[in-house]
Length: 465
Image (cartoon, rainbow, N blue to C red):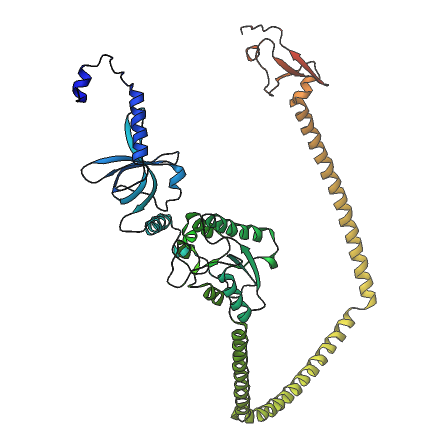
């Protein structure tokens, strides 16, 4: 009876059967203890991102597949979003879903095979933001050539702020600087950078014109792709694009390229270069002003010399030599015309004096008095006739007016009212001429010769004509 199979045939007691739940629980315990930490490579298929934030997919090697899940508490660390057909390497543990008797791989970390996770994530974010138009050149704002105040979003302890301040101190000491401190590395950095950009814009909305930030530099020094990743985050890109202040991105070294560089209004290869770009050297400006001033002075001197030469040429021109002779000729002619005019005036004056003497003789006082008396008599006669005609015309017009008023008064409905009649109207103003126009209970206005009465229809009696 050494064989277990034969021994089981002769057992007196029957072995107890397991329930399905117990069997699934045993299998789950065995799988989780045996495959607590495994690495699996395969191609993603059937990827699904649930509204809860969890990821569900399957891994296949072309012949078989295994279901996998990556919960929200784990996948927020993964820099890229998985897609069907992507070859990946997963680390996780095998467990069983007891209710359906299915086993699956719970993924803790995920990385592409052949390409780094950061590269895949960078390209995914870049493609999505490009499709939305965040990189369009038409949306970029010009950088002001002479800003009075510069805002710097960076770490107050990093190399970037030191490099920028060194350049500004050398090239433009009169420029005011506002530092908005933030983390530039780590999981919290992206949120702080986006918040710092928004804070700078909110400050400009509340401050006076002289205190506003004219340009914003978002900067950090060099580092690895992982160190610079905060500047690839989508929320940082959207905050830069939404900024009302022009933004210069100065992240890393010249070979480094981030999403912030693409969405910013201008990319600077280094923080120092950003400071060089944003402010013109005061010494260069003064030198340029001096050059232009010297050039202007020489141009003015040349213009004055040219004008003086032109004046001398005009002085020696033949026209000025002939001008005095022409003036003398005109003076002689003017004297001749003056003499002729005086002679004509004298002759005309003598003629007018003779005519005046003849007229005075005809207008003697005696003749004038008789003429005036005759004209007065005629005038009195005309005035008497005019008064009489006016009186007759006025009397005739008054008679016509009286006759017209009598006719108008006879035709007026108010005259009829004085004889005991009245005018009945509805409240709308309609005149009631027939009992059919009213209904029982309707309110009516009755106008008499003096005053008005408001009445209510008690009954309607229709009489046939």
